[in-house]
Image 1 (cartoon, rainbow over the protein chains, first blue to last red):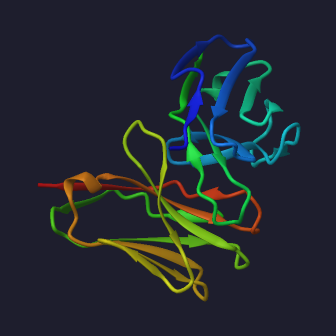
Image 2: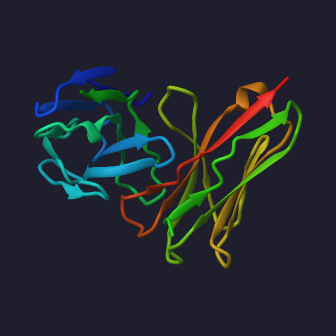
Length: 114
Length: 110
């Protein structure tokens, strides 16, 4: 079974703090994604990566950065957390075989910024 | 106009009912299509891919209408365990990026 794990299920941070969200997958997938999910807006893509050290901006990259130093790990960084970044963050991975690849999601990190 | 639009619901149906969801997409060149299911406080999981010829998996049938730019999901003989949010997902370019709809909530009651 594919397993995608995220470092925390719940996180509370203060405005201005630097926040690291970690994601690890164990299936040797090439692609990894970071989404945020908000009520009424669905999942919105923040960043994705199709290879080690490669990254592409998604639809809402402002205020975020990412790092992919190893194939299995994809980190999301909030350089200076703000209250509007309070959200559920979901990491996903997929193979690179075709456009019909299934995305496997981690359990999510619910981040609250006070 | 949103790239992928779904009726948010909620749809409240009795057990055994047939229920259908539609999802419209704006990019006529979109390449691949999916339905994901998300249970309350859980991560999304793939329910089924949607192919041009339509496909069926047990009680679930998915169809694609490229001319009208929508996909549909039909659930027959609804079970209590079908209660979830159903997410429509579209790959607009054939690459790795996908766009998720906001989801349709389904409640199946006894």
